[in-house]
Amino acid sequence: MSKILISCAVTGSIHTPSMSPHLPVTAEEITEQSLAAAEAGAAILHLHARDPADGRPSADPAHFMAFLPRLKQGTDAVLNITTGGSATMTLDQRLEAPKRAAPEMCSLNMGSMNFALYPAAERITEWKHDWEKPFLEGSDDLIFKNTPRDIARILTEMGEERGARFEFECYDLSHLYMLRHFADRGLVRAPFFIQFVFGVLGGMGPDPENLTHMVRIADKLFGTDYAFSVLAAGRHQIPLTSMAAAMGGHVRVGLEDSLMIARGQLARSNAQQVEKIRRIVEDMGREVATPEEARAMLGLKGADRTAI
Figure 1: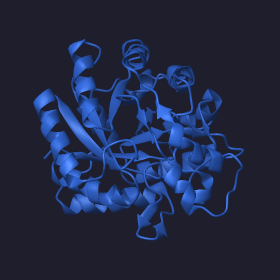
Figure 2: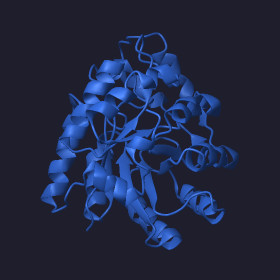
Figure 3: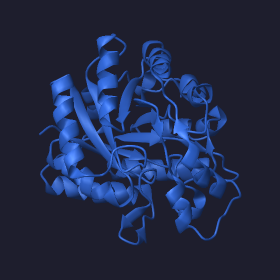
């Protein structure tokens, strides 16, 4: 098996500050936790920003640039900036920071979908900020919009014009076929780095059978021109990423995807999750890839060609 890539999704836009005191919100917290995750073995840092005043997901380039230069100075890990942001943001808002930073890598959701977070609101009794409860409860009528036109725009503005490569986030089987469509149009080129996403209400469920089927169809559509990684929400994080590693795939952990480190136990940091999955994959005999090896595997342009 090839060396394994560990990605760490540091803060995301799904969880809210009331869910965990360890969720990084400020630029200082995001920087500290990102650097620690890279030191623990994450070759790729998947990055969102938040408003430091109240932890609200933010598309403001100033919030991103408060930590991106510090990360570039402090680590050689690949900085992978979201183009998904939050489902409440417009595409123009979601692209503002990535366009300014021109990173080596961006995430790209491969379709529009229901993005239902409202069950999480039922588990919280004390709220830190007024925005959190309406944000979660209102997601019963929330669609994350990424139409074919949106995807083409992201591929053009971030890929063709700025040289970024992509973490193609596939929440369902149809997203694989959408990726094949854009490959056939010549808007993306191999190697494809495909992130299978399990456990988000509105996407595919966290069943092992779904993972094996996604791999089977990806093999059919992309042959040897792709690598797959797995992220799974909540308690499914470690079981499904471990399965992915055993199948020869790559893994993603982080507080964006799960706030826990064990049943009933909040993770103290992103690094703690990276350390746990690293122990698991190394016990399987997998060797963890360095950032430079990640760049070679994914065909990235290099950190010196970004605007960070």
